[in-house]
Image 1: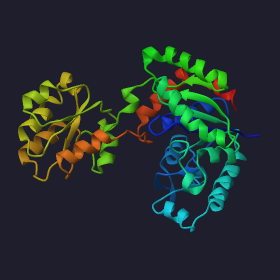
Image 2: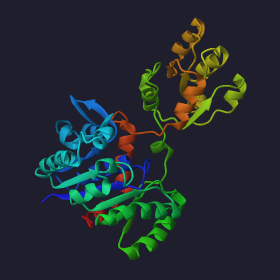
Image 3: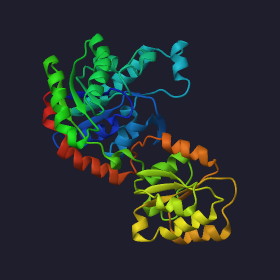
Image 4: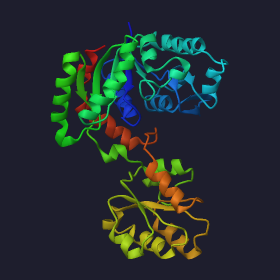
Length: 363
């Protein structure tokens, strides 16, 4: 008989995708056949001729389950889907059949199924299948992912568990992610005191890490939809800081931080030459991750040659400096299958920080 686990979250950006990757990796050390499904996919892409949720595509590619992608993402809400349900063109029964059929097919060939929810508990309510509905329909116990802290975790978990309780679904465990390292044991201890008496186990996941939270150069190129140029072998480099190269060149250099991406307008020849020249000096190489060069004015021929000769990773975009800066500072990094270094780090650390045996006890 196939065991199931519904992976819920208190909201976006809790690290649910990171946890799903980790649990899949750990589960494969305990079970020979593990399946993954994201029943409702709000963010889609085309993969192998199938329109599927991005998280399902990630899991399929990382764990070699590409042939099952249609089952791993049975229902995707693309543009116009919400109106389709509200107008009666699509209905809950149709959505339910797609999800339960896919789940049954996967279930027949695995020992454990990981079911990843979408966003907070209420996501999917427009089609009558929010996360609580989904967990009940698929008869799966719930583990909820929450961000770090104590009061914030308690507040967000209580807000979300109310919906699961309404549907008669057990939230059996909270996995606390993005913990502050020096407060880890203290936070988990107090959360255990609060949730233990109401029958919810508390476990710890990852400590907060800029390496996991911050984007790679490749992520940024994908976000801006322009190619990474220069030394593309550095595409996995993680950007810890985004800095605006608006001041005088010397001041920009003096204020460099670790692994900074500099946004420098195409008309700033002196600064572009300076940063490119410093890039290959070891002490500055640690500080300069690369350049984003916005602006409508062309980069001068001699400046472009210096940039190219230095090998500094750079992205040439047509938007204004303000537009690029806003896009990057508002961006929350999502893991992609190409982020091999991050994925390797996640799976290695998961073995150290997540107690999979404790999770098995709630199944």
